[in-house]
Image 1 (tube, rainbow, N blue to C red):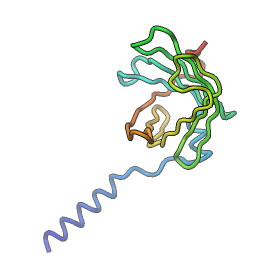
Image 2 (spheres, helix red, strand yellow; image 1 turned 90 degrees about the horizontal axis):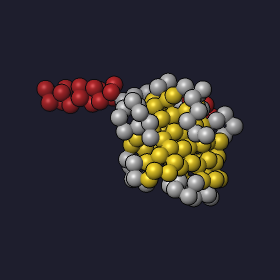
Image 3 (tube, helix red, strand yellow; image 1 turned 135 degrees about the vertical axis):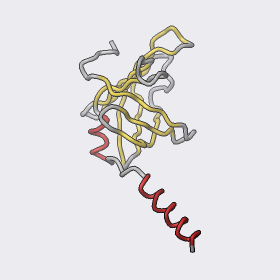
Image 4 (cartoon, rainbow, N blue to C red; image 1 turned 90 degrees about the vertical axis):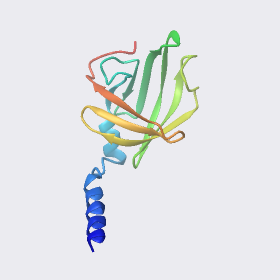
Length: 139
């Protein structure tokens, strides 16, 4: 009996630890609008920027440690459920995707300061940090 009660308590404890579902679809798309910082130090500095617009467009730019040239990419964003996909329309030579390529992620969590996504190919998770929309990191 004691084991059954302990097992039930652990199951209930696990249930309460599950975060409530976040926004989906159009609500998630709206929550993504704005400027996001890609950071290796918890948001203190940014090596890349992602900007999502209300018109369904995205822009990305930045500079990696292994290439002194800045990179840029832009295209269209679609959100279905918790999956966000973007298709590149234009990109610098050193952008990680070529025009016409598509990249999809599952948005794991989003709030006023951060959004965390999971790469659907690798399962790796990454956190981006919201920045003031008035900042213009991409020329």
